[in-house]
Length: 315
Ligand SMILES: Nc1ncnc2c1ncn2[C@@H]1O[C@H](COP(=O)(O)OP(=O)(O)O)[C@@H](O)[C@H]1O
Ligand SMILES: [Mg+2]
Image (cartoon, rainbow, N blue to C red):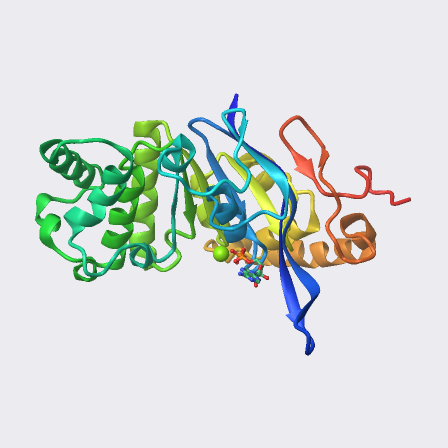
């Protein structure tokens, strides 16, 4: 059973222009996206920069207004509901960003940075609060020494850990992680990812993991949505997406992953050429006349693809 559902979500930003500053067009940042979230699963959202990934995350937590569509949390509609300290929805869904420090007040010590969500959402005595903060530091593998320090005194990886500690402070159900390791060195990326996985299984959390990096997504996610120009081109399990990609956009993203194994480079080149060829032959099956992605169709119970027709014939 899913605890969170988004239905046909749209976020269109008006573009103004002319001397009268009228709305002349819209950016279709998110354009008819549906997705549901079950407890304990890691969802991946992947696509190139500007495809609308962050906007989906922000619309879910209410940082951006949706222009159409609905969001349901535990069966109740919460679309465009303002973040409200009294609502469980605001407590249960947390978001972390690429730059963890942007969400931290640079003049606050870590003990106060971590106390913020606790004071907002839980009623604890000062003693209980301190205990919880130390517990949070332990969860993210840091010691009490951090308490009196300021955010700038930490490395990128440590800051991301502190960001995660803050996100888990009030036992959320879902953490939306928007490119959480993209700003980190490769060696640190792996550490932070593994440790996010540990936290996920320890607390039976769900993640919506947003990344442009298909390698990271494969490492982390059970279910994956591929996004292009505000729409989903394909959704499925990790196996559906990586072993049986159907949409040419997915295939192109996959064939662009740099090869670590030099033997497969030639094979990849051939795959890439085939993909290009296939694309020219079947363009109409992948995009409509305006270049828009078609609606998703179910290929199997887990796998959906945005094709004009599933057998390749376009009418
Ligand atoms: N506040 C805004 N006003 C106008 N356009 C925006 C705004 N925020 C994002 N966009 C546009 O919406 C599209 C999707 O952006 P975003 O969700 O940030 O993509 P991603 O996270 O996949 O890189 C982009 O074309 C971006 O320029
Ligand atoms: Mg983004």
